[in-house]
Length: 411
Image (cartoon, rainbow, N blue to C red; front, top):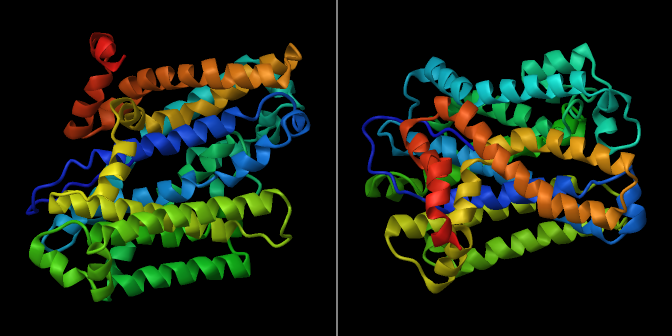
């Protein structure tokens, strides 16, 4: 889902196939989670009351995506001798714009066309999509500029899940500024300062609605790339004693990652069941994001070292099945288009008064697979022209001819 900036004068880059698998897992959690919102508002809670708390507890995907974003963007910088962005600020902004914005604007235009063409969407007052409507000029303009997350009135308007796209876009634009401090101060202190600013936003209420801890988690992802990519001399200088001790015990890191994820799920479940009255979203974000950072760090380090332990080998196998990696290749497209498709189908369930269990089975068993098939076409048409050569080569595996040619092997 993220563009990786290329920089000259760098060591050889590892394939890191598990990253596409991780993206695949995250986007599956996103799409299946949103697909569960079937029927009228409140219908799922009334008919299957045990499911919403579980779905809410498993909302670990966006924090890990944010960590992965910072990590991916920082890889090439970490491999460079002087830790600078090729082309400076202008080159960075051009690359980020070229990679992320055109597919997003296409998805935005198609969504607006869908709303204009289907009167039932504009008249809807009972389905989940009605929470994000009616359409206003403010929501359209702020979405077009990718600043809709800066106002509470527009952050969840139009297409709810797109709030995180604005956050991710802005974090990428802030990265060159972060690197100015990165080159002058211990990067660990820079990350600490980013978390402090996140906490300040949460306490003061300034942009509190826009996931303030994403700033700290983005910095954490940058730091993980910093201590896992580079020459042997660079890594030796960058790694503090505690980091070296942790990497010497990969089994402990695997266990820590799993415990952090379990803690995030437990916190989310506690909150969704109403067992605590205080808002603890920030705790869930920090736990899940840190769990993702530790997971990425240990798997990257063992790949760079050229050997897996039993624990890291088992963990890596979770993220390297071919189908999962292929889903990861179209994760950005799936993220862009899944919600309007799911919402449109949901209007049919409402119109036909479909039982919740039947609607949920159809969403998960039929519509979700269709979303990913459509995502392949969307990625081929609207993402591929803006990818780098390596990404285009990977996406070529999803050409329909190759998919059908490889079908017996996948069976």
